[in-house]
Amino acid sequence: MIAILFVGAFVSFVNETFLNVALPSIMKDFEISPSSAQWLSTGYMLINGILIPASAFLLQKFTNRQLYITAMGLFTAGTVLASLSPTFGVLLVARMFQAAGSAIMAPLLMNVMLVAFPVERRGTAMGFFGLVMITAPAIGPTLSGWIVEHYSWRTLFDIVIPIAALTLILAIFKLKNILPQKQISLDILSLILSSIGFGGILYGFSSAGEKGWDSVHVYGTIIVGTISLVLFIVRQLKMEEPLLQFRIYKYPMFALSSAISIVLSMTMFSAMLLMPIYIQTIRGISPFDSGLLMLPGAIIMGIMSPITGRLFDKFGARALAIIGLSITIFTTYEFSHLAMDTSYSFLMLMYSLRMLGMSMVMMPVMANGINQLPQNMNPHATAMNNTLQQVSGAAGSALLVTLMQNKTEAEAERLAQAAAGDPAKMADIMNEAMLNGINFSFKISLLIALIALVLTFFIKRAKPEGEAYLKQSAS
Image (cartoon, rainbow, N blue to C red; front, side, top):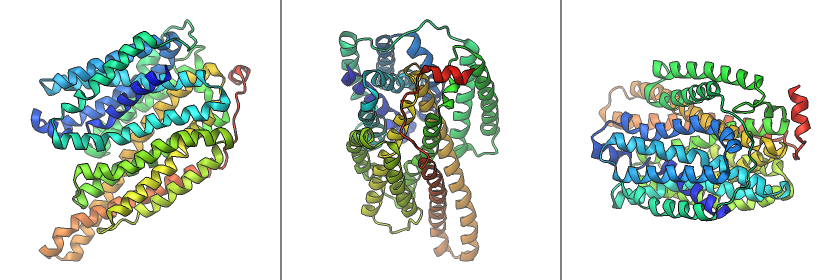
């Protein structure tokens, strides 16, 4: 049963980053602008941002079998539609179907594992979850880069269809119900506030890199999203059966794990975002070779996730997190000193080491925080963690890209004055300015990672405190 859930989650997570490399081909086929094509990624993220907060309600209201079959059915239907899509509009709708199915996968898989495994073996289970959740999106660009170079972008969907369909058929016949249900009703106002809140913030931050912070589309949606989110939180704290339980932050280890995860998501996205810009734009390396450079890191993460889980069960989260973040900080420092002639092998080594460090932090810290909660809070914890990762990832990406662009513009102006209009020098100015901008963004990422390292020293090994704690805290 776990294997069926893993395969379904893997193909849906790979799908998140599959289209990034294929966007130029899609733009050419449908004759659309980059800003329109970007909606294939932005729209996918928005659907996730809207549905993930509601997953806590869905996991309590419906059986895991009902949810998985529905989610996998939506994902499979969306994949088939995407492969056959005659227009860009149909392709965008197909991606929305895929996103609706994918949004439920991570919370569902995590909750099944939290119920299926005892506390002392949760680290191992979460390690395998990390293998799927982190490795799949990392493999996506490399795999899709090779496919798009040799075949049509539609092949990306064609190879997923049989795997998704087979997983759906196996789920119908083999999946059993193990998650507890309770009779709760959906608060429509909470769902609306949540959707506007998380959706608005995600859209605003993800649009900042393209439109700039002074665009009304950016600051307007962030302001509306923030107000809606505040109203949503206030409403949840007053409700007996909230859509998302914010009282879980009265558990200190869960609150600490959330803070570390938010900071870590911001710094993790820096390399995933800035490295392709450096490799492809400045160094002129092909998209496929760019993806290939990141592949060893993805493989290391895949190998290390289960090992890290076992180490967490034995030694706890603090030692692993300190070692992992120290490695992450070292590699981020190295990336903040990139040059025009930094070797491909050095870049691959540093990126692989960075992924090794990351694999030792994210899942152990998250598992330690969840371990302090009573079991009935697990759906809310997984929904909260997944939502905050989406928001902090989008916010971190937007912040680092904006800082890079601002620094690039300032450096270009400075270097142009120094060149005094010499055409021979002017040709290299933009590349050097962009390199300085990327190095500056990595320096900011280094400071963010240092904050996460300081927080890890406060981690203590957590054990469930029981439901009485929550009732006492609420009162």
